[in-house]
Length: 219
Image 1 (tube, rainbow, N blue to C red):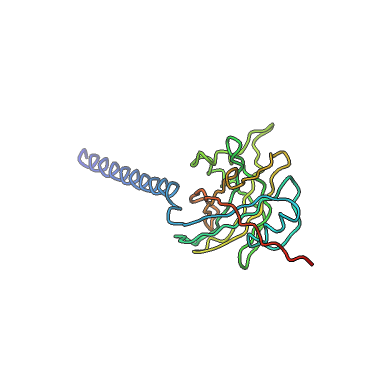
Image 2: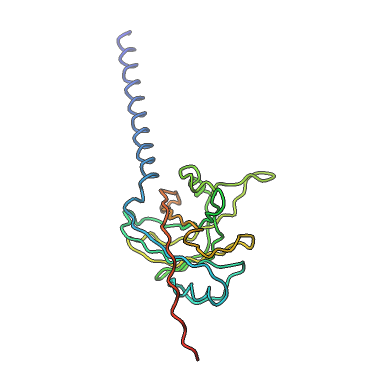
């Protein structure tokens, strides 16, 4: 009887050890994905901030349709291009942040275009995981208010193709100071969200000035 109990105890310990090992491997792989999941994706973006007709010109120059100015001090137009995506499942969500405040705060989003698709602003509670894994995205966390927590953050999503380009439009809040160098003042996060809505990883997109559009011929 004692031998059977000893054997049962050994088997139980082996099972527990195996389960612990499985959990450790799973968590380790997930940690590696948070840290390096986007390493193989080559991505860059060009950005311009403008108002009125200059804003409409900037959106066109970024590859979007011509449209009127947005409310607020300035609209922000971004042309993003990427290649080398290891996983084309789900979406790439793009979060623009104002890097002049600490922590950097998301800028309200308006709309996005890519060949064959148009999307509007969105946000999911799952995206708050970003603040837990990336210190530079701590401003995406929910905020405590009277009676609970709230979030007014927004992102713009495009399908996670192997290669892609897209036009992103955001609007600076009225309270935001003006910017003459958005490539320096703003930060852009590229976030991979799988088909189940879970965030897999995020990376910062380097920003450059959007080339000024060619002057329109006078009529």
